[in-house]
Image (cartoon, rainbow, N blue to C red; front, side):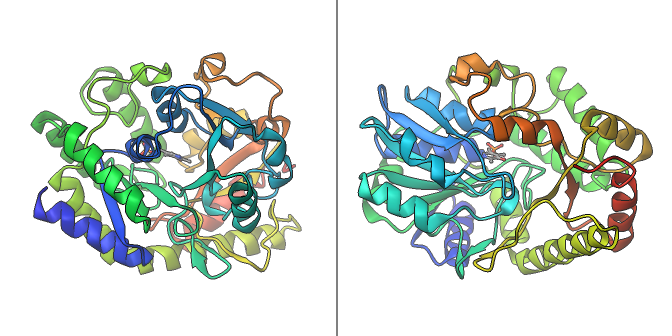
Length: 384
Ligand SMILES: *Cc1c(COP(=O)(O)O)cnc(C)c1O
């Protein structure tokens, strides 16, 4: 493995105070590696919240296991732990604790339930880099954690993923899996990714994001850029080159991002607090409960509104950056839910959140002025 990738892995592991970190092409590939290393396969079940991204479900289907969805609690958008035990069967092998938007899950309860049934817990930290649960960083509480550095995650390397663990046996299994099976990104893919990062740096400002997203989608369809998801990823069939490692370019970018991480986190905290205050000033309660035990670092700030589609359409026109996560229980709206073992009505709170929640940006380019403008815009719509 290249030195620069090793350096990124070491620095990432050190930031979390864990023993090992393994870099991959995408976050979903990190999850795939973890499932394979844990020997999850045909006939097994994997529990996760029914409020996620379909790309997160693909690895479960790729290894032949069945995803089992738990509904969310409405204030944190995380797995409702009161509904967890009833989902466990003798086929359950893994629980994926997804820290949605950056809010930590109730890890103590999840760990207790998992341990009493001999089940592993993997933390999905793709939206939660630096969030703390009872003083500990998320990703370090379960057996393993995984992260994404795709372009709208806590920081971006264009695309990118990382798995972390302090479990020696698991790390050895990941190591041997990557040694034997992983493929390298092609030079064409790396070149396209480099171009995307340049486009990202130039265009992803709150005012131009909607336009840039449209451009990204268009170019992805035309095959001109490596989209974060290809059309073939909307069916649960693994592509031959799915299990892919990280490029040096991504690692170099990751090291740079990681060196600025404290600033990134402080900024996210500051803007989230500003959103809280601005909403409170309008007598609007932010839609969740902070709870003493959690110190969230949010990737985006979720707000429930009544006219989601209308707001998204008008925001795009007005140059207001508004996100649509998650558009359905298995984002995005195009997902053929039945192919992923989701039946309508399975997770009513998640379906409701999908209809109501839009999210506001918190990334380093959001100024206090932009934040205030975004709140002005959003309060023009009926909040739930
Ligand atoms: C983005 C995301 C993933 C997958 O990350 P990629 O790098 O896009 O593969 C997994 N889980 C959640 C919750 C995500 O938001």
